[in-house]
Image (cartoon, rainbow, N blue to C red; front, side, top):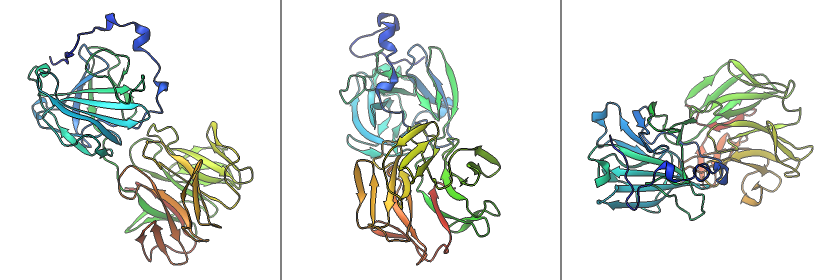
Length: 393
């Protein structure tokens, strides 16, 4: 039964005060949308043994574990990558921002070095049984942690107050010893976002090369694309100002929320992997998400809202395109100046799968789609189309 034995000291849970082990995770920023550190669809088994919340993870079947590929569970920067043959073997630690870290021990090989920037799904190494403390059994010893002391890294390998139960795809594991969990990885990478349009004149939805939906939506509806169920794909939807209802195909998502004149904006406001709806209310310069106010006295009438993860921390922020000046803002800073034209319709997306969203526009007058420095699509779309962007497939 593989267990991680500390190199410096063997501490038991009984030796550490319960209050120290249970410091609140809110000392860190909102948890990123972590997925299991194996490629999409991989069947794995996680065992807490006697060292919860740390997990020993195996492939299913166990015979497939040695040499199995590991991938990053969320965007971040590698802050540790080294070998300790007398102890833990090959080790990688990733700083995911906001105080969140993941650590991988006993690796067969390491594919990334310190300072390497990863996105969800980036290969980081292969599972092995290196280090004397692996007991010669192939597995990855995995720890998720919060930097509670602010030293820019996370303690690992022994009972400490920075380790926290891992969360994959919104499900928490390792809350107690002697737990076994069967998991299918939903780590399907950070896809390049696609452009799309809603054509109110006939209720059609298109992305380049395919029809997304037909005969759905009404004139006056305002479109959005959002991952409302954490499956990694964005659904199309509309905000219907006449009723204050929010629809996706086959269901009403929210009722009686929003007002005529509100402009919809969607984002993962908490960095938890779940997109939620919001609105910009130009009449009061207020931004709302359900149950809370995102910003007050920010923006101007005539601004067009966007939202994106502008800094790669896993959480979306509000923003605006100001057509009158060609300026793009997010609270506290300017995203771009003198870019875009009156009549352009703004979008935002991760156009290169680096985990950071960039601005873009659909220019109906020329049927072209632009991002700074590049034309994304030409001669596509029609006057009257309303743009969306997201992982639509």
